[in-house]
Image (cartoon, rainbow, N blue to C red; front, top):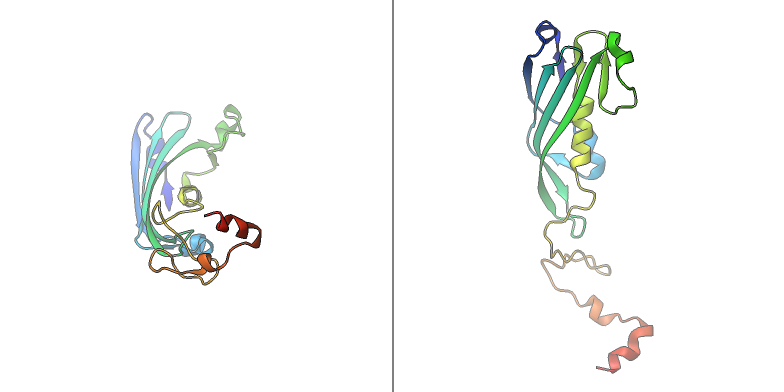
Length: 168
């Protein structure tokens, strides 16, 4: 997702909109057990402030992920924003290098793919569940407790708690 700021550089105090719709990088999310179910849509608006460029981006897509409890497939909608400050190298001394989202450029071409990928990864929850009352899988037989009933827990009682059962 490369953009060129040459036209915008000639017009201070104006903005330009860039839109992309392309296949997401499957290798980026495959280790999370996820895959793209639709294209990745990115809208990026860049404003020339005179000394720098301020970029605001929006990403949208749908991913297929696994429920952390029952391992069923879930469609997860990603809608996130990101911001980037783009500065020409000639003005580098006027900006703090510790600021996170500053990109220094030599020419007018910039690739926003790393920012899109970072926001996409941050948007994916670590432990996504299909529903609040998901019962998960049985630790003994592996059956999905949302769809079927198993008696594993009733059969196996911790011997230390056996006496408590007799109190009923």
